[in-house]
Amino acid sequence: LLDTGMLFPRESSSRELKELSGLWVFRADKSPNRNQGFERAWYKSRLGETGPVIDMPVPASYNDITQDSTLRDFIGWVWYEREVVVPARWITDEGTRVVLRVGSAHYYSVVWVNGEKVTEHAGGHLPFEAEIGSLIQKDRIHPCRITIAVNNTLTLETLPPGTIQHMNDPIKYPDGYFVQNTYFDFFNYAGIHRPVLLYTTPKVYVDDITVVTDFLDNTGFVRYQVSVKGAATATLKVTLMDKDGHCVASSNEASGVLKVVDVKLWWPYLMHENPGYLYSMEVHLMAADERSTYEDVYALPVGIRTVKVTNTQFLINNKPFYFHGVNKHEDSDIRGKGLDWPLIVKDFNLMKWLGANSFRTSHYPYAEEILQMCDRHGIVVIDECPGVGIKDIRSFGNASLAHHLDVMDELVRRDKNHPSVVMWSVANEPAAEMQPAALYFKTLITHTKALDPTRPVTFITDSNYARDKGWPPVKQIVPDKQCGSSSQIVQAPYVDVVCVNSYFSWYHDPGHLEVIPIQLNAQFENWYGKYQKPIIQSEYGADAVPGLHSDPPMMFTEEYQNAVLRSYHDIFDQKRKQYVIGELIWNFADFMTAQGITRVVGNKKGIFTRQRQPKAGAFILKERYWRLANETG
Ligand code: GCB
Image (cartoon, rainbow, N blue to C red; front, side):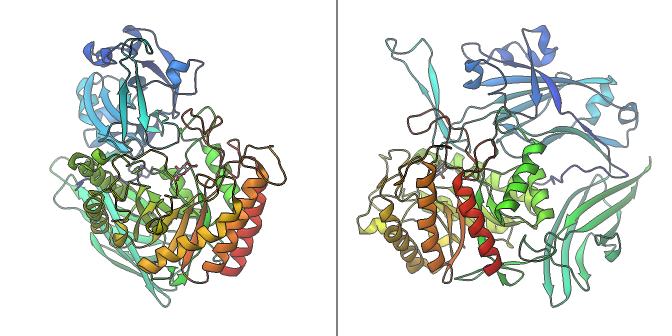
């Protein structure tokens, strides 16, 4: 288990922050073995001295920034570099810790400062950091040079998994030709996707805070634990402030329970007139050693709420919560998966316009900045790890499982304190019927519950018990030759909520809208009949090319998307009074995919275009979600 915290970097009276967003120097290593950068130690001098460089914005995916298709589809190492002028006091004050933090870089990263390696990290959607104070203090060089090499190659041991296929036929392919295969449809955008920061803390500092909340009648309880690094003993003062800055509870202990009288609970959007209420937990640390005294201050937003699951309901603050929401992607024109504030705020405005109260972070952890918005606006989140496309039996191996467990550690460590996060999703559409899946998911889900006993855990399935009755699988993206004869969904017993994706009248029975009611009805009854657990329709939808029309509806038109939505909604309405606890449309917006014969410049199942303009389906959903909000909260 991880033994350090990963608190979001915040300024305070004891912490400074320097954001390194903007233009970096960049080069893709296009040498035949893609390894020249390491062989020639590009990190030792300025990147511009070892070859040609171009401007590259950070944060952004590099793929769509230039006109060069070989960069868009590049596989291998790319190199980023930036020089930073560090404030003199960071260098001269030995009581200061300087940390370099990368919000996320896809997929494998190695980081150097002034030519010395400071860290490396596997995984594309979670932050990592390195303490660099001693290094810059040693060199006493003000402009410090940060070099980050990032490799987007996916293998059977990465998450998500992928394979590199070498095409050795000289009649068909150039010498050394290879491609990256993936088992998911979104484009494998790469680069430095989230902000890179330098921040400081004192040498003795608040390393981590964990809060778990509860309430009884009008009293709220905040069980907390603060961990301190850098000294054996420190004096702490923990103060919980309400929105108006009044202290509502305090303590001098490193762990304990804060009692809040007349508690204001954190409520989801549309469930309460004041959703997303946040207290601020201010942790004030004081310590001293023979050399100096240290003071650290960190303020954590805290929402007080509970989450429980029964066999028919999902309860937030003991009230039934119905997920009427969306699945998203971090995806947009030009910047790819790069964090972009205008896009984030626009998406929140669209979700509110729609009456959406929730989303799933399909299919990887989203930026912390997005979760902070969810906390403040009361948008409920199913937090998914990058376990998407686990379709190859080799991905169930020990090394893959070990990495998957590590990723869950990192995810829970990062997101555990967000009130908006109400459930963890450990995977999307794994090949659940393969023999090793049972032990794999049992281990993974047990591990996740040990990391966080307070939230339900799920994985998302595209399988259907109706298969046992001779039906075809709901959908098959990858022809699965290793699939055993059993269609048991072996890991289902371990989840708290059954989340099912289905695309009736699309991936099979294409064009046959009339099959939706019978097939959807059977899907729900079979799953509930088998497990008596509440069900979320975690994906459904149809591609619609904006502006394409036909009546009677035909596939790919806006009318067909409308018809699919309406037909699903009729069944949801019958079942939501029983055990269906949510519906998440696939997808909020059109998104880029790899090129292929089923995708016309991307996946068009959005109810908004990639530019965030509504298709006809958005209006159907808007009307429905506002009606549901009035009926169910
Ligand atoms: C799914 C996947 C999602 C795809 C979607 C589709 O089941 O979970 O990642 O984009 O289907 O449109 O094929």
